[in-house]
Length: 142
Image 1 (cartoon, one colour):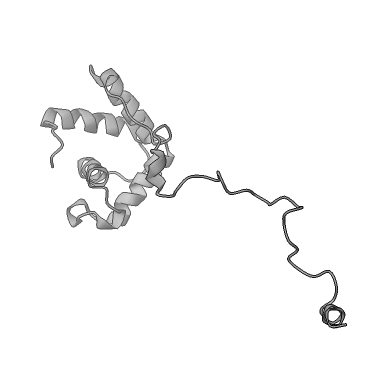
Image 2 (cartoon, one colour; image 1 turned 90 degrees about the vertical axis):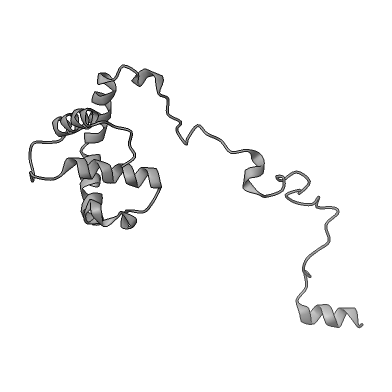
């Protein structure tokens, strides 16, 4: 796995992850394989179903991720890792809510300029007759 992490780094991460998780529930899971699966999922930008078999059943990985996310484990995990790091304050993250695309990124031309909502009443011609059709035809030929 191309994480750039040494075995000492993994030992620290696994110790913090184990401490962040609840002590209830099933034991004996391979936490490192689970974290490597999450890393692979995010780095390669794939769907859960596309996880390679070496990480186990994709549905089991997803269910564990979903349960831990709802329990707030990852917030505690990342906060604890950041507190242990000497360089965490140097890292910045871009949030998609503050990143804006250029106007031309949408691919459409202009806005509503030059397209009036309604024509002035005096200039518009009637779109229907006010008389019933039978009477209008009779009136036009008399």
